[in-house]
Length: 270
Image 1: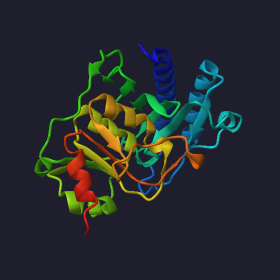
Image 2: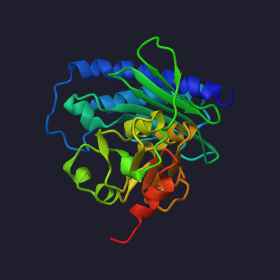
Image 3: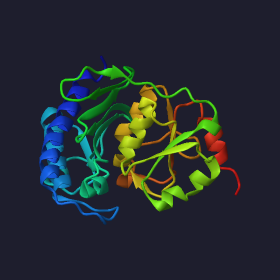
């Protein structure tokens, strides 16, 4: 299987980080009004564990990650093979102790997304994929993996949208234009992408003017390997590894069947 060893290393690193995160989580005192940009010592500890694992297995590979940690500081940031890591995506969910966060590890080889792991510590669930081998999910320790497939919804009137847990998201242009039949809310972009990949949601839209590669990279390949489609809001491919690792043209992840119609509605004149 292509990238079998890379996927195995990523999953082992994610599982080890999940154990660390769970230990911290159980002792963590909730912060009910945690801001959206909160960072904890757990973010840094989990990232350092993950990056050390990746660097040990593939010392020549480049690294990209959200937090400033020692291993990242000494690693190359640009190269053909690039690992992209978010140690806790949805730290607000961690801080509020509502379980809505995940560990994200993705890999890009010469510009091509090839590996993605989205690990949910509280549920002990992992959605993962490698290029050309489909998307899979495990729920529970020792569970057997099951194949993931995007939904078959092809009618926008029946759209299930996954979005952020905030008043701003509920009143956003996305909701006003698409008028979803139902919505799912979570703090984590990784979980939103996993929801599209597993068919729990039909669509995820990110309209932030700027976000980073680590916010979406690991979840991107899950959607595509499950039969869906991911583009920017102009319908163009998402590129990773640009200077600053920034994305400035939004993101639309869908089951594929709703992609074109959703793009047209999102880009229609107000």
